[in-house]
Length: 131
Image (cartoon, rainbow, N blue to C red):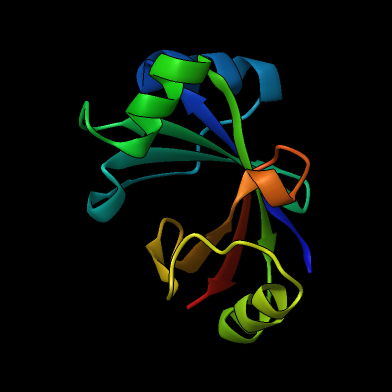
């Protein structure tokens, strides 16, 4: 495993993209809407890892609710794995709470699944596997 990306929930994606272009001294290389999650993403390369900005496309989305409750900021840490199903089974056997029965299609051509933050010292963990 390695850190694939850090997900940051934002209120205004356009404004956040401008901010991170200045901060990271580079352009957003990819934007994508993930309809199932009601989110638009914007990605920045940072060495071997990425920064993913997450903006809600619907007031009922998880990201909109997160920003309303927690404010903008780090939403999750994503780890790339070779076999997401095997890793989810291993984590379940270790007593972790996996938030979905099966991985779903996420942004950046990945299968994704999340592990509850209560099991990870308050950090939402995403597992992702390239498709």
